[in-house]
Amino acid sequence: MDNVPSVAWRPYPDMDDTQRIAAAHAFHDAMATRRSCRAFAATPVPRAAIEWAIRAAGTAPSGANHQPWHFAVVESAAGKAAIRSGAEAEEREFYAGKAGAEWLRALAPLGTDADKSYLEIAPWLIVIFGQRRGGLNPDDDFQNYYVTESVGIATGLLLAALHGAGLATLTHTPNPMKFLNTVCARPDIEKPVMIVAVGHPAPDATIPLHALSRKPLEAISSWL
Image (cartoon, rainbow, N blue to C red; front, side, top):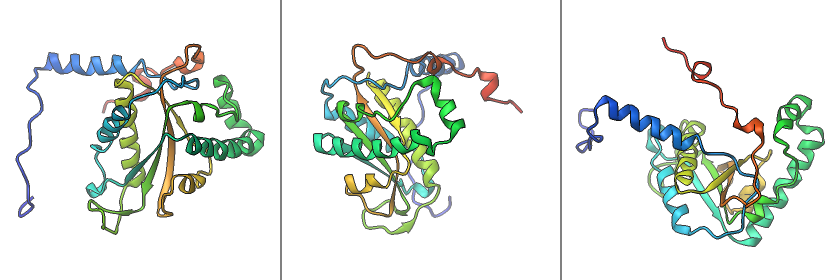
């Protein structure tokens, strides 16, 4: 770190171990109520809530601090209709056999199909792009590193922030997604990663029982 410009690191809150465990437990309990929503109400959501959630996503760590992400936020009816049209075109091929029998068998307990009407009903769609080149400054044109990992972490923070704001979300990844560059007017140097639908759940929204299952700690961790 010699000769690298730096500032004093603001310390984390002063907690004892009991408080740290309680804070981690509380965050778990809050996030454990998050579910993917496939039935949205058209109830408006204030833009400021989306803006602050994206700001939170932008605090994620990234390779060389290049922050290789872009969040294209779609509110217009025309934009959402275009995204639904492109997504459903890909999904019809997917469910018609492109996915393969094993993948379709894995999805069966969730009851999903090619109908993505929620893409027009949800008040906001956030289309997340990974930037292959860029940098910290607007005019930078450097190679970006660990783009997939960086964008994935940022997306996780986005979902957590939206959930914390009392909003329902659904991640959607039509394949291929190149049509999103056209709809969102993003350059070819950016790669679409996913669509996040955001809003309030519809009054009659349900959750497939399969989606309630979570692997226990011993199945998702090892202690060496």
